[in-house]
Image (cartoon, rainbow, N blue to C red; front, side, top):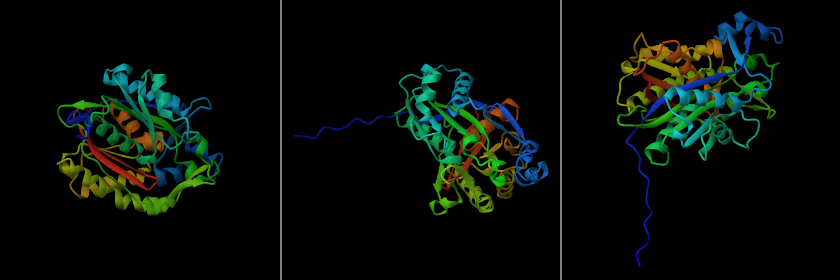
Length: 326
């Protein structure tokens, strides 16, 4: 008697981005505001991390609230309705508790009923990881269109008397819709981890986000540019083909250092580099789609631009891929 054979799903050969959306905390907090609580100054913060102001959530503004707003805007930007999406992924590391997850709540509130919904935690690399998962779900035939959201609410996870870390983090969400395509709009991923350095970014006392700033800075400025270059190579392109660089908005000095190393390796001088951290702060998994949505609205990025996305952070985890702007 022959054994039964399982059927396998199959999907389209390629995927692409269809639209973006974003949301932020309602409160604008300047460097001078923080200087009223901790021993710091506007000049000190600008010189070290490049931040001028950041956005924090109101007490009644939850992570899911921001995810819903960003996701709804992304669907509208893509010209889609909730019924056109069957999967929702929320990349986050700041939910108040491990259960329930953010994705199922977000999907339901947006109106994506009976969605496959799950959270993904790769910290600041979360959006890049989730984008890859979404693309592969579609290519494998397990999903039709996927709403990918990076959302963080750091307000409750920061020691506001820790001057080294309270100046950096902020609240916000960014979203993208991923769908099938005839031509590739999302390139292969270059990703990995350095788990031997897990203690560089962690929860102090199980409550407060803490990072060894100088060591993380050295790691990011030396190890991440080669990952970005690998992603370009995997996409079959040259660094000179890249129009826009969107690294995780960890620190403006890190962003500038990565851009400098890539230009030294062949990226163009007119490469557009995201600097959303100046006015948005570090929103971890939300930072890449948040920056992209802002850059598109400002006219700094146009449809068809070749964009290099690079995420990196706690874990330590990192991820990069080349995508085409919708």
